[in-house]
Image (tube, rainbow, N blue to C red):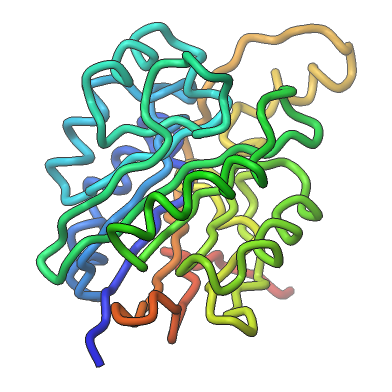
Length: 267
């Protein structure tokens, strides 16, 4: 039985997240003997988007595909990057005519694999339906490969869990992104699709989901806009590992990654 080893690195936030992956990602790739490495980079450029600068660093480290989300559009440089780099994705279900690619096919050393980027609509922008978008694109992708990884960038846990139930058996794995808080519900669904509700954040945890705490708190207290500033301290890397059967496209093993682990003090 031939397997494909897949790594997914959770939302990389600013310089702390970039510094962390530059230090540790090569070793993690080696540890898991990864054939395909995917990373969500929508916050890589100081918390807002991913430009050619961050993209080059990540691709040089061994990342094969960068996925995005609602913050992909926050910098014009990251929007421009979508026009020239087919490996940097944006969610497929933005309206027709939006530039950039929603999926790509990667030729790994063990064969082809697909990465599809979708975005949820609950508590987020009113864009095209991610469920219907998967309906039309998956047959097209399956004509080339059965190994399909989805980054579902969504706010609501119910929408993510609905999506994995909708697609179970049609894809290899669905990884939830966007909330920056890693969940502990990783599992393989009955028809063979791997899943986690949110893979978590790669970046500074002495923060409010990557943002300096004072302006984040002030947004809630005063209900006014505050300058977004990326935090700096206590960085951790979050990710997922999937072992996928190449013949069936089903996940046969998975592991949640948090490095380094949090220190829990008990007095």
